[in-house]
Length: 214
Image (cartoon, rainbow, N blue to C red; front, side, top):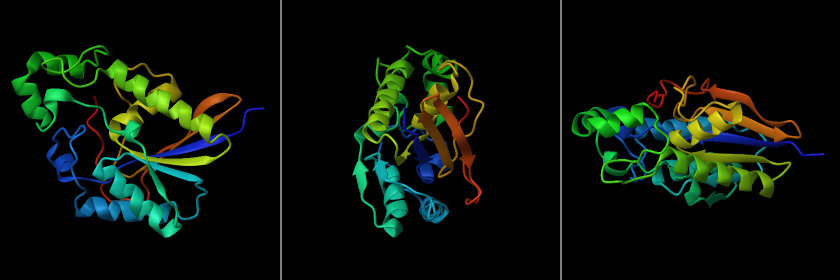
């Protein structure tokens, strides 16, 4: 019999680059004041939840969010570089509008979700390689903590990959679900495989930004 394993995924709190619609990728951008409040609100929302282990991306916006959630629980956060956002190559640091204007051909491939395409100068991660990185990590964590409840504090692109794999939605399909800063997203695995338990729970938040719908 396969034990029930539950994973709660939380996208980091808001940053000024989220507000500006600027590509962060693996650039280490801190939370803004609203993002810090969101992280604290998420800690309150999870106060009654059983969480056995907490992992955080080592990028500051996720790491600080994880720390705010973990502190009142008196739990440690384990750093996991594999939870980093997708590397967007030459797009990083640009607004999405600037990326579209400066690199129209590459941006068209990005918007079309061409899974093997990379970024200008053959930089960054393809969607295929990013998905492989994330899903391999999720599989390892599920096996490591079988029967437990695990919290992953990470990035919007990571949540996109997990939701698609659990739902069987292709990588190149348009996204039809939200990925808001600091919303609660629960997935579970047992003998029946993976399923979404609850997605996009933002009842504890005020004005949480969604990832751009690409």
